[in-house]
Image 1 (cartoon, helix red, strand yellow):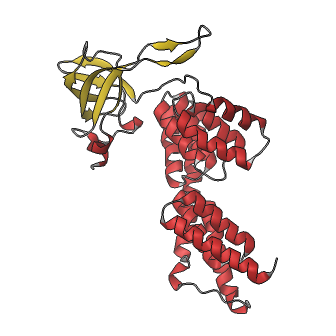
Image 2 (image 1 turned 60 degrees about the vertical axis):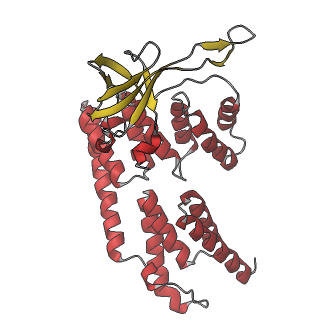
Image 3 (image 1 turned 90 degrees about the horizontal axis):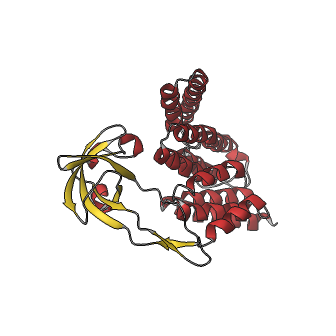
Length: 328
């Protein structure tokens, strides 16, 4: 390919990637920056912004690599035939690279401690340390997978779903790890969320039978299990205790702001041939609840209104007013 044409294509991809980055479309931005570097490996601006993007995505090692390339190319730029224009503040400071490497080191130490706790059977310690590792290095596939598996083993299904969702957002996720995540998410009521990652895997790895079979099954119009946000575990003096708390994603700021709706599943609608489930009847709403107190794995809610036979133990709950949570 002609050198000038290759550079033009690189700059076009870079500019498109920068626009996607500014709009928060990180996956598309990453793809465009990489395409720019395929056409011009020494395009400093693409290395810099790709490093910045990776840092924001939690992919720390990748971030350090591209920032070190930025510094290396800066020293060589005077000898290049083509001088690339770049703002001085687009060079990562050595302190940024140093602090990122420290995060990588501290995250690894936390992860190693978590694995030692696991071998000794100290589940709480293992969970705390692997959470610390993910907090420091959120783009590390090994750490995220370990957290998701541990949360699943400890019965924190909401937490494990969230971790698996974050894992699927990382561009370098492998097929096996991606399918592990999807095989956990689909039965957990995340069918709609799971379609797009499977399509992306199918495009990236054409001919993979595992991906094709899962995508085909996922796109069929069949009944899927439903997992609500939580359920009512006890009723007492006009209030109820719920089985969700801080560890399932609630926040202190949700108290006296977040509203739930309690309900019961409708009965299955059977079709022909016998046994085929076409869907469910309408859910039966039993009441409106207002969150009043949040604990680690439970919370209290005030019964504001009751319908039908009223709110009872075992009723399922879902957020009634998502806008209240965001403060809108």
